[in-house]
Structure formats: structure tokens, C-alpha cells
Length: 284
Image (cartoon, rainbow, N blue to C red):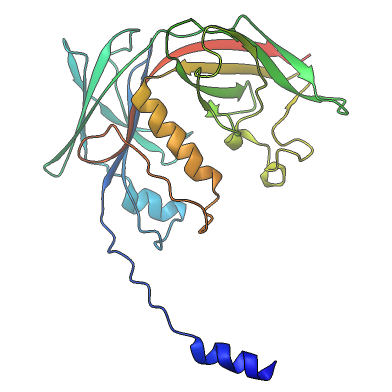
């Protein structure tokens, strides 16, 4: 055994991994929904080994001097820098005169210190559930999931993203915790019923992160829940699907790397048009 260990020790070799230099990029996270003004967050990316605390994010990642313009082909508006306390980072750019309309295309331009980023998105026709109800989970006396039924149109590709919010409990809509982005490739033109749980960021506390935990992922009796189901275009679907796939690896260094596409020309991120449908359910 000693001889074998000595053999392997003699064969060992130091491996020096040279990491590529960090390249700073501008990142855009913007959306526009029918009946609402555009909202855009502009930040920079950070080094993998950089500091990521919230103070650093606000002080050095947020871009406070961007010129953000949205146009619908007829009118354009320069968005106003706004404090948004329910978001992180809490500084974004919000419009007031341009309001989203179904079927329209919207052009985004962001100018930062002489550099221009641009993107285009559209707002698809929303979908509407046939029905949606709350059902207690087996072996639970007060916890359950939502069960919507949806009929999708035939011969039409459908891409959508789902958010939930509990009234009086959650500050804003958040995407589903076990994947919020879907297409209808496997059920196009059919009627399907599926379950919806609570959003990842709308859990009560850190002890409830596990879906199998006492409250994690479930709604409770007497909750008033609003589901925001949004149709999106293919480019937006590709971005958000890849983002969720990346998050699902939990920073596992042995997982396959994910290439995240972007519709932002000159930068990273996404400019997403949402055709939103809202359904409110009382858990009972």
C-alpha cells in the first residue's frame, strides 16, 4: 500500500488554471405589459469572484445615468429614473405616456456613457384558463396547490411565463419557484390540467425554501391568490428558459454550462413584452 501511494504521489502534477479576464457588460431587464407603462432596470455584470452584497449592488452595479427610451413606432418616451422599493435593485426607469397594447411592437434604446444598447419585443395575445381552483395536498389539513385547466389553440406556437402573488402577503408578482417558463410543444391544441405552487421569492422565511418543507411551495387555506399568466415571444422564452436552467444547477461546478441568449443588442439581458391574464382564487 505504501508503495502504491508513493507511486501516485510521484505521478501527481500541479495544474494551473488561467481564468479569462473579466469583461464588464451592461445588463438590461425590461418589460412592457398591455395597459401598463414600460419598466427597465439597467445594471452591470459582476466578476464571478467579486463582492455581491446588496450595498455593493446598489452603489456600483446600478447605472443611475442611463438614457432609456421606448418607442412604439409612432411615439417615443424617455423613461424616468424611479425608486422602486419592492425590487432589487430598487432603482429603475419607468414610463408614463407609452402604455402597452396587445399586438404592438416596442423598441428599446439605452444609452450609457456614449454606448448604445437596443432591443425589440412585442406583446402577444394573452391566454385565459378554462378554470382554476385550489385543492388541498394529500395528508395536509391546510396546505395545497392551484390547479388550472388550459386549452391551447391548434397550429399556433405558444410561449408563456407564470407568476403568482398572495394578496396582503406578497409585495409583488414573482415567477413560479419550480419553473415559470413553458411552451405548448407537447400539448398544442389540447386541454391540459397542471399544478401551480407559490413563487420562489414569496416564501415566508428562509426555513421554508424546500418545496417539501411544511409551508414551502404551498398555498394555505384562506389565501387570496392572483395568478399572472403571460404570453411572450420566442426570443423572450429562450432567454428566460435558459436563465431558469442556469439557476437550477445551484452553481454546481460539475454541471454543464448554459449559454444564455439575449435580445439586447450591445449588451446582456432581456426586453420582454407580456400579454398578461390575471386570475384570482380564494383558497377554500
